[in-house]
Structure formats: C-alpha cells, structure tokens
Image (cartoon, rainbow, N blue to C red; front, side):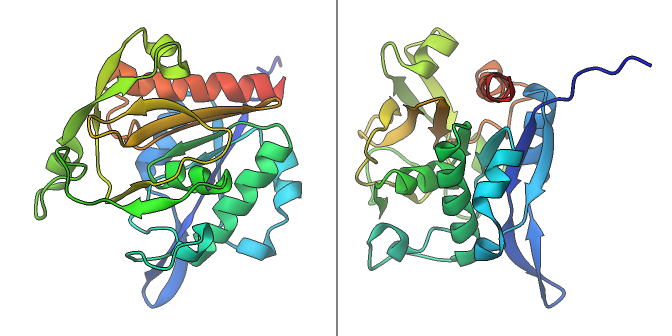
Length: 246
C-alpha cells in the first residue's frame, strides 16, 4: 500500500492548571485544530515539565514549535522586571522559553500567538509592560461574553515589505485583541511587522540562520475558519515546517 509522506510535526507547549485538586497539562482546543487543519501538520502536546524535559533532544524531534496564548502572564523576573500581574505559570515559562531557544538553535521555526508573542520577545532579550490606558483598547470591557471578547478589534499598520504585508498583500488589517501586557523593549534581532495606532508593537519576525520566527499579539486561531487573514498565519506556519522538515 502506498503511504503519503509523513506530515511535519508541530509541538505546542501546554499550560499548567488545577483540575479536581491536581495539576494538569492543557491546551485550548482551537490552538490545536487551526494548525492541524490549515497548516497541514500533525500536532503533539509538549507538557510543561521545565527542566525535566531535554529541550535540545525535543528540538531535534520536532519540525516546529507554536507558543500559544494563555490567561497567565510571564513572571517579571524572566525579563528583569520586578512587578507584574498574575496569574503566573512558572512551569510553562521554563518549558516555553527553554524549548524556543533550543528550537531556534537547531534551525527550526518558532511561531507565537499572544503570550507566545511575549515569550518570544523575552527569548530575544526584550522586556514587557503592563499596558497603561491609551487611545487604543487592547482588551474588551470586563464582563462580556467570550464571543464578544474575541470580536473586539483594532487596526494595525503592517510594515512595508514585511513578511505579513507581503503575505497578505495589505498595508493594514483589523485584528482581534485580548491582552493586558505588551512589548516594552523589543528583543534584539526582531523586525517589527505590525504596530497599533498607539505605537505598540503587535507583530514581529526574525530569521536566525534557517530558523524562521513569526509572532503576533492577536489571535488568528479564533477565526481561522472564516477569516482568510487568520488562515494565512497558519499557512505560513505550515510552509515553514515543511521547509524545516525538508
């Protein structure tokens, strides 16, 4: 029987939560289904075991890594800060930061969404900030439904000639925005791909040898079924993994 070539293998780092009094490793379903469908890859969960995981060994087994959004924030000490709002997830921090560094060192692509965008900024030596009130609402008002929260959006300007601008053939897009933290100092070697009207960095990219890095502060996984701009993110992820696997 003829078998099609194996699809690239995408690792997705879990978060730690408590369920029935015990810690569990979890990823929200939409972060798995979007790349499985629109990136044409197979997905495997990476438990948040921190130092118990051989990050270098894992990096050689995976073709790419996706760092997802989460309701937790990075611990401020991870980027030299002294203050920050929780909840925190130190085991996710250990695993995401360590594995992302190992993947990039191995020449493998790493993509990020929301918290993952912030994690990658820290991997490259950047810092984060709690967002002060501005002319741009980066999060929906408290108390709205989940659908309303992810329907909240604002425009971003795409960097001319950037990866996203070229991929979408656009100068600006409207993105859903669900975050209270953002980039303070951009990490070394990162190229800005999109900015909000208040100047906040909303997407960046990097090319570190063969390793492609692309991260967005918004949530393409939420509406990839209906939004071609969101599907493009996962098409780009799949292309990067196939190039890596080859």
